[in-house]
Image 1: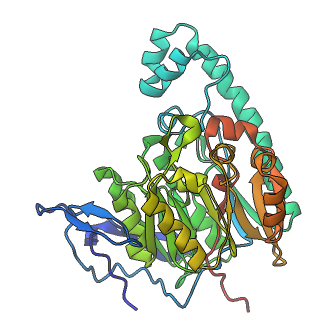
Image 2 (image 1 turned 90 degrees about the horizontal axis):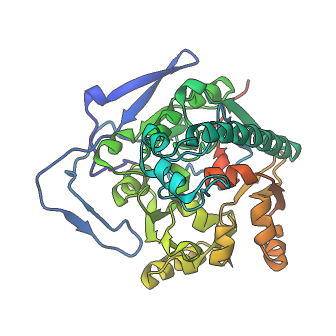
Image 3 (image 1 turned 180 degrees about the vertical axis):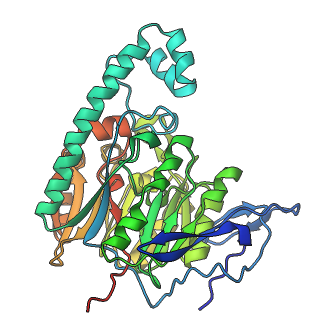
Length: 415
């Protein structure tokens, strides 16, 4: 089966390798190819609605080794979590993430200065802010590190194989605790890892962590790395399984368009991996109808269920398309309200224990905002466990699902 990628090119200088366990692994760096032609618009209810100035090409070497008869399971028993080197509030991302909340001892003016200005400018405008921020960052890191360690311990107690990888302080990556954004893994072929185009500069170094090398050293196959980072130069983004909620077994990606998720960014993934892309726009009614930055805040797809805040999808056609797709693929739809979405009820993830038992992971914030009837329904599809991560949620703007990078790579055959 050939993989047709119509709007991206790979040139010889864009192809490199990673050395993993004495083995060269091809890296396909996909970069935009500018062309002075009229915008091409593609319209279909279940395809990406896009307008792009990329020339249509069919590179010989872009085959991702994806095979439709070699599907990922929806839930995996092995996950990667990244231990933060220095977790603190990322003011670069706070401009479009309404779930990152202002520190209590910081004024609105000080907060906005840090969000919209270089830190040295904000410090000059607000005397004493630098000292208070540095103390706040240290306290935040200490609390977040405890929350991270407790979450790892809880998952392991449920027989979930957690690979904990420490971040590197020199990378200066406050959001590395959310590894599902820069990377995803896939079972196809000899195992695939994908690197995604990230909107914010200080999130891009997260892709430098040796996650592929670590997986290979533990016996997981990483036969190919596909790198979409070149799209960042053209301001096209797709922040992994934050921007997209994947129905892996049915090869569907649900993507909420925002400043961090563009149609072209989603198309790069969908066309390369042969997924059907269903895009929509969503708003948070609890935050002045502001755009929701990631799809995995709005919804979660499990093996047999889907949690979704459909009222966040304001366009009726888009909303109906998403719900129809979930029904057609046999998902038991559990509706949540905008208030529940604001409490991270959509940011949950189904995994499996090493013994094959389904487990649904969520934060205590989400658990407390679900109704008993909703929790009972979820309980039909796995043991519901909750983790206490209030610091990470409040200042990172992400919850339990964001902290988990699922490992779908096949394992080497044991002899």
